[in-house]
Length: 169
Image (cartoon, rainbow, N blue to C red; front, top):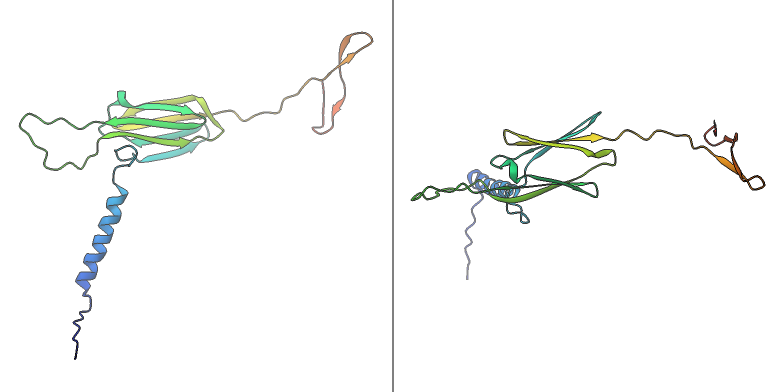
């Protein structure tokens, strides 16, 4: 008994279709709604300058009053909600590609971030956060006193702090 097996070599056209299918799947996975929030995670830019950092997030279609910015344990959390545009009576939605829902985005802040110097503003659908830097710690002199148990008086020591090379005063 003889078996015939039909074999066709892949054509250039079929290879391109497979590549396109794989690329479409990869890109659709990149832009799917976040499983936690139900809305797409907004894109962000972070810029560092001498005075601090600027974080910019794209928030098109988000009402400024729905934006919430919190800090806890040096984690900056930004939450907002994008609502679905209501349809007029009798209208039906044909395509809906824009996501709606609540999202949250978090950033771990460096130790140099001044949590009391965070300012937020929204303009043209972009949330801009400005975070100041704390001044670097400066060395400071600690005055050392001695207590004379016989007289009960404290006196300033004139000893030198050898490790720092500074006289204690």
